[in-house]
Length: 493
Ligand code: HEM
Image (cartoon, rainbow, N blue to C red; front, side, top):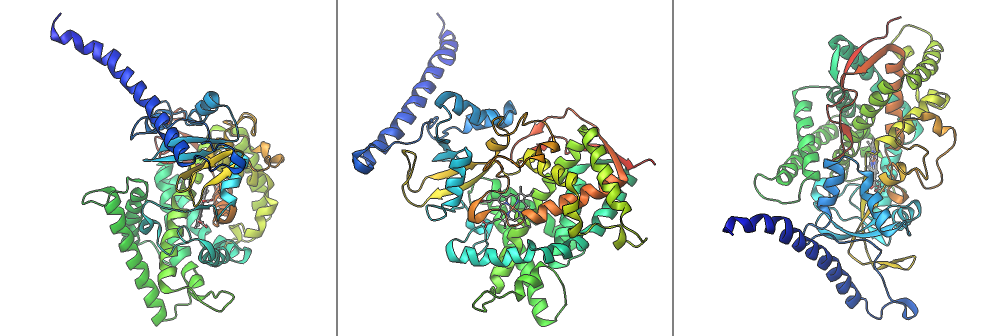
């Protein structure tokens, strides 16, 4: 037999066998290391156990499996589904090895709630805190976090702020829709991103579109890429480019802030709000905190809002009955407005509670969009949960997505059906905005922006997807692969 004849044998026999052995060995090794470390530490002599699951291959862990389900077969829910089939539903915790570290996945309403609401036991540890913003609300913990959240909630989540924001963002949305119709064919992702960013610049720092805001947009793009990249700080890496852009953004907004301190501009925007607010002790935010949090709020609100609006246009194009009902409600709302000024054509924050069907469309869009597949925490101490141990220092991946696509909680979960919101979701099964002390402070702002665009879209325009069967990308966020290309025109009367 020639030497070449060994190769197929090796390839189809020895290599898979070696991989299988490595796969078994890795899990056994991790479990043995855990058992050794925790020997005799269980309460009342009980043995401590890791949650069920598997640590995957050496170094890679379950990364290949994740990529298989999310990128190759495009069935992301089967990643958790496969765990449930292999190890049972249990208490909603699984051990795994992902993103370079042994980790715990939480994926049941109760387990997620437990992790998200136990802020003392589970903290935040970002791979590159500088990218998130060292003094930003997403990075600080404890009393500093509570204080900062208070400022941010007051600036973007209370009715008086939302009332102002509704009037600030609407003219630009109305103008943008007209330009889409003039173009006739658009890539919705590109156009929605543009108008969302222009509105962010306006409501956060009163900046009008200019070559400078184009640059800022590019820097945010690179910063967001850096956040999703492997955190390697070497020349040429995406992470290094992201850090550079974060510094540039902080410098630009620092300049805006300095200018405002010299000349009172009278701007009624987020930056002014954050500069003026005082906590209960009469203490204001430092300049650095204002700037860091402005940048971080853009990071948190830009891509998420854009993605939600993309999905709204996508689902409505595919659901003519829903669009007809949405149109009916919004045309009625529009008829209730009188006058011919721009302001008289706008909806107000106080109109939104009356828009019952539109509110259901918004909730269903956000449920199905699953913008954050998971959120990250890290165990600050050994944590016991229903007889399992989450070891100190291990990351916990709180899998939000799996709740929203589980047929036990949502009938026919992959169907876009706003009517399901006639009943509220089962307790704990709707975690699109996270939960506990870090629940998204921009949730009302996001809902309001989607409602506003739905209003103007439905009363004035119609659109068709050019590729209705396009594949969906699930990483880093779920989106139609073609950016949602569509024919877009004014509604024929
Ligand atoms: C549909 C749109 C949005 C979705 C689905 C969304 C989702 C989330 C989720 C899942 C979290 C993590 C919560 C946790 O760790 O428990 C979060 C946090 C956050 N979001 Fe949003 N978000 C959206 C829009 C916005 C907007 C518009 C803003 C502000 C402009 C914003 C600002 C933030 C901030 C500052 C945090 C960090 C909060 C903290 O750590 O205390 N988000 N969001």
